[in-house]
Length: 421
Image (cartoon, rainbow, N blue to C red; front, side):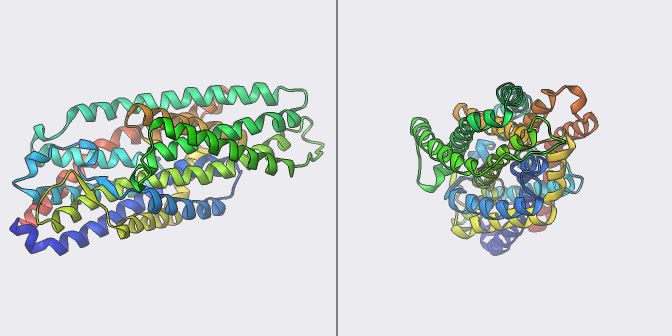
């Protein structure tokens, strides 16, 4: 208690700096999940992607990033074991933020799309197991997260494969692909509106006072989906068929119809991502602020001040603008060649998997899900369409994430313990 009273201001300043650094890492690495497919399919340029993400990631983080965030991330640690030594939680959360942020910096510099959620979870498990004792960690939860490494890419890949095959069958194999696109794309627009609304409502907005049940979210998402389908039909009518001698079947015109769809998908995914993943930076930061302000009392949930969400949103935006292009290139062009129709199938597959996971309570990573979806779409065109070297590098970076976060967090935990006593 005395240590917290003595160094409280220093702890808060360090937490804000490390929290901003962590949010920077989320922007530099994770935002590529929302933007990679749109840029890779050339539906939008990298500058447009950054502009969309700056606006919608920030809005998502600020408006729906959570007034109440569980401080002991996802029930990973037993708060009872920390009651006598609350300063250990402060050291641990500072260590977790710094460790995860450094790993994200390394991964982003190399263009590896890794999971920010798993980075912070690995860091918390590391300091918890070594600093507090193995019994302090909820190992069942860790096992659940490890199982999601396999489940989420497989599920998203399967959905992406089926979606792309349906697009191919209904539209590209039709006698008049452009007319077929105009007929079927409104249905896909509805699906995108519905699914992305479900992502946002089930994962993002419960903390902003809009605590809807799964049934209410479903109903509202259907209404939003119908509204967006109407908007899609209006935008679609403006697209005129352009004759091109080298494009005998008019596939380029079909891709232009899907391009309209991808712009909306990029906006909505950025908002849903900002509202969901800002918690990776804000959660541990909220824990430190809560413990310091309550003179060492550990609460299982802490009120997050509005300026903390702005700090998190700002960090995400800075990360994307400065370093995001590297991971966007890996997801958008490195794994397989994407067109708007393929990018749409991958984004929708990823969003669908996130919704299913939210409904069942399975902890998954947006990164793993989206990479799995892009793989599924690539596989629909045959193994030759996939860049196996890039896929191998991504798989390796996923395996390293948890131990890297844990190892760095243990190092920093003992460093802070030594510095402050």
